[in-house]
Image (cartoon, rainbow, N blue to C red):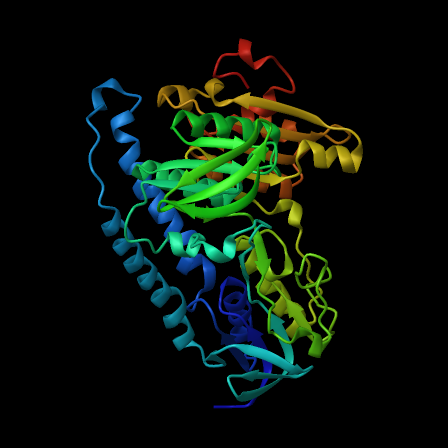
Length: 468
């Protein structure tokens, strides 16, 4: 084993492996030092892959007996929750082996080191007693669940997404704290399996950073499926009584106590920076505890970069990977690359899905003091009518000074697919007329984008489906 490298990466998730891939391509002598989650980090182990797998299992259990087509309505079946978890674990292990372990084994210039890294001076780390020196470093240690300031957490067993994905028995009832993407996905996942779910959100609406129309429509859809959603509720205390978790909260109706067999905490993330010794290397944190970086992802130490959740950017596997690649390019090639965060899409994989890219109406108003928007219900989309699933809407945000599309926001069973077209439109600086002039496949859910663009030019409620 060596004790000196050109590039040392601290972390083992998407940002770390994207950076290591770049280093391998450049032939740079590199070490990845990882502790905590297994190789691959959050996404493959306790994030995107297992949660989306179980969501799909839950959807296939929940929706068939509730089909919109009378010919397909059947009595509801049963689900083996424990078997779903076992199969999920098998999938995770297979993907971790294929996408990380086998890839790592094929590299010539990257060494994987298991253990907790601590910076002891600007150019050296200690890994469980082993001293490793480096010329340049990347901090990519990810994030963990941030506990809200609620009294009683130290005396109650609660779940984060990690423990929730490892449950071997389905809880009869679940209380979810937090109405962001993670909380909503897990709320629907367990509700579809048959768990009685209540979700508490501090803000006046779920998905508070999204468009209000998006929040309202998803709230309506989830409530119709039996999920209890309480907004504007501040949890004050958590305890346990008669084998149930009890959360005492205050809201518009005063004090209320919510009870469930389990409590899932989904109230945001905190950077994994504890015990890294960042101050020894001159790396500063922002007021929220995330690593400070400039537009090129360089920290306050000139030879150290940071990427992924630890920087406080959107907690997305795709963005972490992009940041890891960009940071490595800047560190190893002096490339001076930066990311346009206005073109980064993100999605919530409930059913219907939520997906967005670009600016919201409020963000555009703040920047330009002017905005033009159109919102089209999916009930106007021929494909949605054909498959008898008109849940959702699409909102188009346009800069009226230029006619350029700057934001696309959707609720739909295929929202994540639809918004990908919005990414291309925004990156290409398309106007609404560019979209109208483009021939779309008919019938598709993605036609909602064209309808929203046409709504700037005509009354789409009085338009046949073949009008250009």
